[in-house]
Picture 1: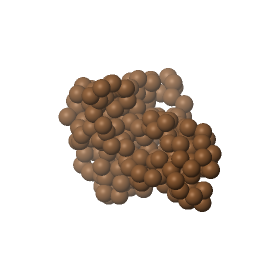
Picture 2: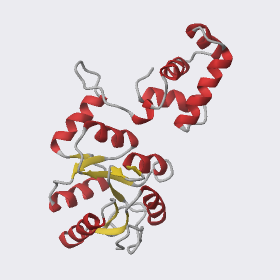
Picture 3: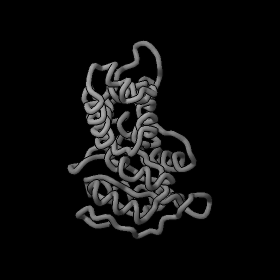
Picture 4: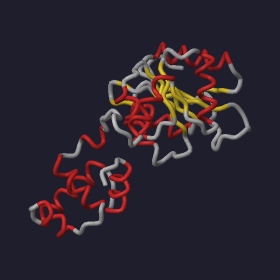
Length: 236
């Protein structure tokens, strides 16, 4: 482990999981002392977990995780050059087999929902005990979802269709303007550009401009992907 947070791979990751060996874990946190403590705890408590590498920034995490292909990533939510949601955004499409477990000092609802929407399998706070952390790593590696007790309610509220559910901010959705959301909602419902223009009293050219902007901001490539993206966020 290096003190400056540079990603390293002193254990070889095992692709595909299974019973071939210990669960390989990659640590992402901008505090080197915290990473060192977690590494020590994980490796001393259980021979079922092995640290594959670590990183202290989003950039280092993306490089290190892609190189070592760990089974589980312990992911900090807030870092100087971004956070867990950004790591997920860049890596989840390319490494669907890697499981992400958020490990953060924050227990804010918006932080929990941001990383869960990004594809994390669970979220635990840094008050977790060493034994509980090992158990959480093993459980998510086996396909379970793991949350610190009070955080599970945030997820249920955000994804449940029930009165009184607390509205939770979606960082990806928040980058769209009100008009872009209106265009996206109609597009996802199957409206043609001409029909959208008529519905919103704007020109077809303006509709095309809004759609291009939404595609750029969401980093999607076609209408089908936009429709699925909008449906996942209940815009339709």
